[in-house]
Length: 412
Image 1 (cartoon, rainbow, N blue to C red):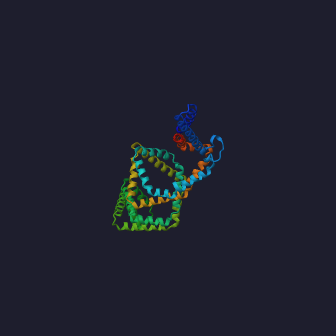
Image 2: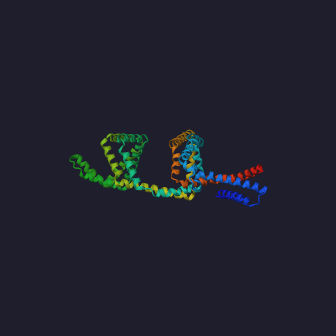
Image 3: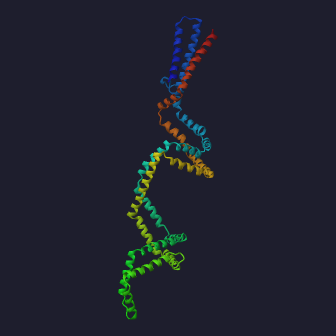
């Protein structure tokens, strides 16, 4: 340290000056200088002794009341811990500082500055991509499969079926379903192949009829008059006309069919045995191997889509992250009461952490100091305050020299 060399040099100058005055011819000026160098030498030596005695025994001699820091090591550590806990970093001062910080607002400003930087957004996305790639989808599929199965197992099928049917009918889904069926049936009935099928079916059934008497004669006459094509066309026209009539919302037969369908559906919703069978089949599909493969396939699709979007955002600088963050901030700013509530909760938690962990400050200081041996402790203290203490030696030598000059003058 430069100050240590300066202190040694000041002491050496005083010693050399004193020796030199002893060798010179005795004159008034020499006597005055001799008194100054003598007092400077005494002052420098005394201050060297005092500074050295703080850290170690001077010249290795165990003189009483020297090596003060090591002899009072435990007392100094306790005093330092006490000063930290009760004066410098006491609970009240930390809590008051926390109350002034407004942690949530400070964190929000920090996040805003970070998300405003393209480099930060890109870095976040680059960190997210390998995380998404390494997600254990097989385990995730098992968890999803188990969760869905648990939900289905706990469902009250009777209540659920009743609610679903009620909602569906209120929304008119039953009417839409019937219209869909009638539309498909109408399209089917108009096909040429349907006409052929109906004619062949009618002819086959007439041929199977075994009736005697006048009724039998009439049936045979009708069968001889009508061939398959005519009967098919007649039946097709009847079916198409009947279906078209049912497609009319004002048709009375349609209302009858709808009432019957609704009655049957609600009867089915009251049949616990049927509902349990449905529930069992659904659980079997979910908990089986196919259910797991289905879940895993959907998760793979979701991961692929997520990676694609992340790569797009990485190329464009991740603007969507800032947009998402900005929308969240705007949403929160519209609800200041919520922000105040969160701020108070965060402050209360921070204060609780301080109260429950305040003793760790002193504990940490003590543990770190206990890990240092005497040589390391002395070296650390000399590094931190030794340079300032060395100036005491320099000042002692200079002050001694000046006082010696004054005393020599007074003595003359």
